[in-house]
Picture 1 (cartoon, rainbow, N blue to C red):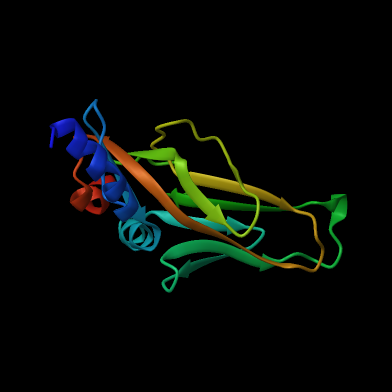
Picture 2 (cartoon, rainbow, N blue to C red; picture 1 turned 135 degrees about the horizontal axis):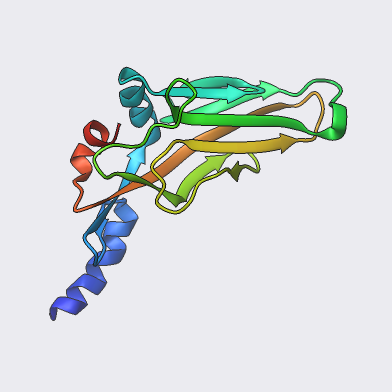
Length: 163
């Protein structure tokens, strides 16, 4: 089997297993367990907040979420909900040691969210916003997954190096 044939065969398997892949430029992409990142980051002073809802770390789902209920009457027809994840004292600290968030990898479930203010390869926290229009409705918006990238990074060190 030729080397290029072997890579073509192996690539879909690695992607299916969620294993890190190195790009041509030496970038290493690591899928991060949100709950593990949360616990490591909180221990180092990082903060997680929800506005218009309650922040809930979800061990069972290995995620974090903003949960709540809209009021019976919504003035203006929109109930704004915002999640600030990976902040420090209302500031936006940077990930450390060259790690960056991969914007396209951020996955939030439970309804429509808008990723706010992030550019590709950003190093500051994740901000998500939603306007909920249904009155007297329970909601849960869960940050399920994201990836971090670093030039010549090592996924086994992502939690200790990035936060």
